[in-house]
Length: 302
Image 1 (spheres, rainbow, N blue to C red):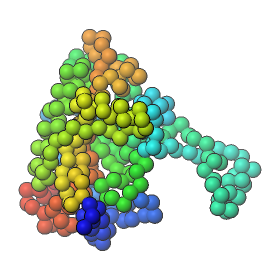
Image 2 (spheres, rainbow, N blue to C red):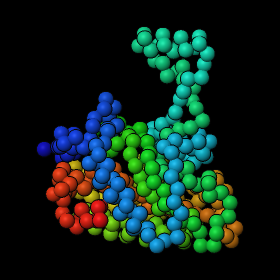
Image 3 (cartoon, rainbow, N blue to C red):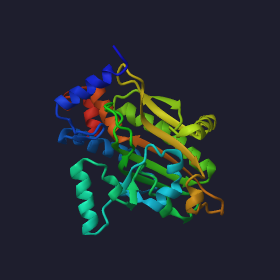
Image 4 (cartoon, helix red, strand yellow):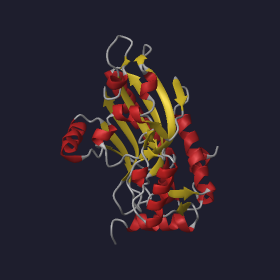
């Protein structure tokens, strides 16, 4: 048995049950109504976890301005994961050239210049420029949920190219940001435990690109800036279901976010991997949701 056998069996069971609908692109699947019912229930659970907090809510589309993307630093750190939106903008002659390339089997993407948007790699990234300026006393807490894209084609069901995140983001001073990260790391673990998922908290790093990326990854781990809530869902390696991140002033500095006392703010986010948690629930409790434990069903669909 190889480490990937459990993932392959899970994917096969999800496809056979119609919960996932494969397409010709790896990591790009359709989801059934039954799958989406679990997602909807999970989103409600996540919202209830933040009930009573002074949270603002916002939703962004799955694309973001290219200018914001460039200022976020994502291109420097993760060029291999990004997705850029391109579109046709030529005249009839250029259109004929495009069609000729398609019909001949030649590369045709060169006929499509980039637009002013890219695919959103993390749901919190479009938020930061909207918070430019001085934060209120005590900072700001924002809840944001939506679709993300990362170019990681894989048959592993836990590594989708298009997936959903649900984040609680804090913009505050250094201590407030880290306190938010640590508080939500525990709160998130409690949420998952209530759904019958056992997780462990691990120090982690992002998959920074290249030689310089290895230095960034080591620094991130040394400073304990990233924590992951991981679960053993099968015979394969553990899966990160949630991520708790301190960004320091990485986003506040380029977007001009300051605290009430005039200092450059820090930001932190706790992200629930909505699709990964949904898949983990099917792996843990079985394909038939009507047979899931009563406490789990009650939490998802009260």
